[in-house]
Length: 600
Image (cartoon, rainbow, N blue to C red; front, side, top):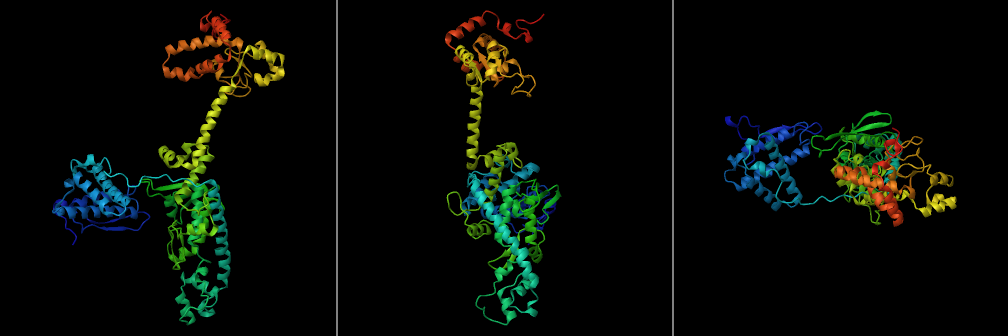
């Protein structure tokens, strides 16, 4: 008998209630038979609040899991406490929660299931902690800071993407299969169906008449045909009923081919693809359409929209429209106007929604066997919808050159980096990026040319070697050696072709960036100026914050000490140093900034 609430309990929600969800049937809940109704009332109240629009519990399946957690907890308390019927929520101590956790792991065959049952109970207690903490035991809020004392039973293992060759052969097989499916249902099946009549008038031996009956009734089984023929035994060869149903309805293999291509082309979560409805296409315009989908694990933001290309079967929008066409008769016969994935189940010849499974007897496995698909090791391919999503992410990551912010759409940057970028399939891309970066850095270092006196003599006597030695054309040798190309710290190949500015415009950067420029050439006559600037940088180091100095002058300082000075003989450097020390460093600044030669 349902418990009758007392006057003091009238403010507590009832134990029998109904949960309503936008896309699922109503869920009637009856917790009146549980052993500790006073405690259960509060958990039920938390569940009802969490099942409101935008709450954590957004589907009937999720609510069923939460109800299971409540029943498990009530059964545990009833078995361990003699006064469970009078127990209130504030008497539920952290020690009892720990005992409940231990029993779950001890009695349930699958540790992950035990973890899930504990997680939903803790979720409801946390909701009460956040809304009505006065109802809980005083020590419970501290205990709810962590989920459980047992570690997660199955550490999350990263799912790798398929190799590009594997994805290519899977795409090719799916498209080839769909071409045959479209012809089978929209051409061959329609032709046979058009030729059929009521088998009660035209006879049950004609396959066209049997197909007519299938189209009228939904499915036809062997006993139906035997009765129509007035037979009691199946004739030799049978009636080919499975093949006839496939002329008007898609199979699990057909739907698997569409779903595989859809995930490979959009990266939609498998659960979202499985839950697509017939009205999922929204707002078509300019060759694009939005896919309205549901991701149940994204609490508070379950409903999402993805804008994709729309057109032929090579586009995501076209694939969904193709699924709508192929399943049209099956959905009409089943009377289910919501589910997109409806097909004929060949084992028992019945129409039912497909779960798009990947188990050994699934449509995906049959597709692999039919087309002989293999992985990179030559073994039969194991289709995993999560790996298909990872494959899309990996292809997107490669196409965008490893742009993590683009990959993170729909995720946090941390999740995108950990789950989708840091996978074995992309290791080569990351290693290549590191190699390219180091190569680019090394190239930048060696592009600066240092000309010793020997080098200057060589290009003066052999101008044809100017490109090899100095990186200039032979006609630039004379301006280079005469100083016509000089800036302050170095000579410049082309002042109007700066890598830091617009071609044809004067170089826009300060003079201390010259040594980091690909146009720079440092002849021996510039050594005194370079050393004077080095002394100036040393003085600046004493006056500026370390991080600011390192950011502004660090690269130039290192380049002078590691690349320029070691290129000259010691005696040349010592002579240049003596010249530099003859004047204060700032006296060697160019006239434009107040150095020697500046006009008063």
